[in-house]
Image (cartoon, rainbow, N blue to C red):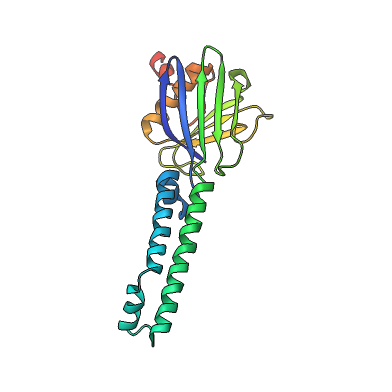
Length: 210
């Protein structure tokens, strides 16, 4: 499921920036580092491993603490430590270079009556998807309360596009970050696309009329 990262109006266009929630807990903090910081950390680890190979302090430490019976064994343990660090840092560098948080940018253009989408997949080498969906092709906009499965902190919105649209635009789910978003996002989408959202949401304009 996607979640809202940012939203704003710009020149009559409602811009919605979404990111894919990372399901693997171990990858979440790595993705949050970003590709630049992640690569720097990986390179720093490789540099440290290189410096470790040129210094005998670790082998002396192993020997002094009784973790090695002689100098030869201590040097072997230092080599194992160095190569373990090299492998871990190299894999980390490769991971942050090839994977990223999947991002989806949606531009709701009322004048052109279309949603322009730009999707960057998790795998860096995968092709970026771009295109548009006409407002009239949107089948339904659904609003879900936080306690509806799958449960979220502040609820979620589902936009059902045409059956021929590529995934994830065929049925796009994204979680909201606040109660205010659950109140106003459906209203914004309703006014932009002239589609009445359904589900766990009440149109404030209808309440005022009553």
